[in-house]
Length: 114
Image 1 (spheres, rainbow, N blue to C red):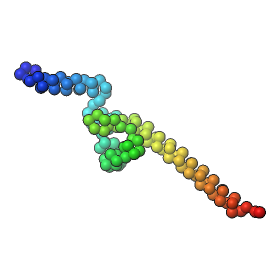
Image 2: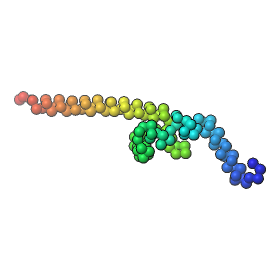
Image 3: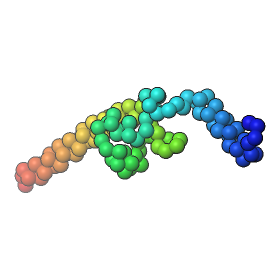
Image 4: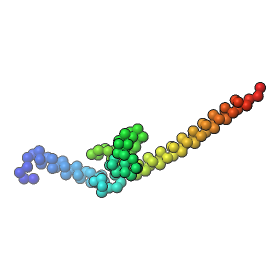
């Protein structure tokens, strides 16, 4: 670090410290770590556009974290997909029950004698 200004030395020290912390916490470059996806990789995996990811990540509560931009853990996305499937099944059964109740009530009113 000879011949460097204090600012340059400080930048190098900070840069090395950040690298160490990222490595300690398991962060790697996107393409080298299939468990952490960037929006482009997530979009390709899900078969949607990057714009769709950007617009819907908050609307649909897609789990993500920020580290140099939005990042997604593959395991969290898989859990999120399963939860959405389960919720869709529950909603589907619930709407069937509501429709059956509505139809039953309508028929019983229609055929009342008296």
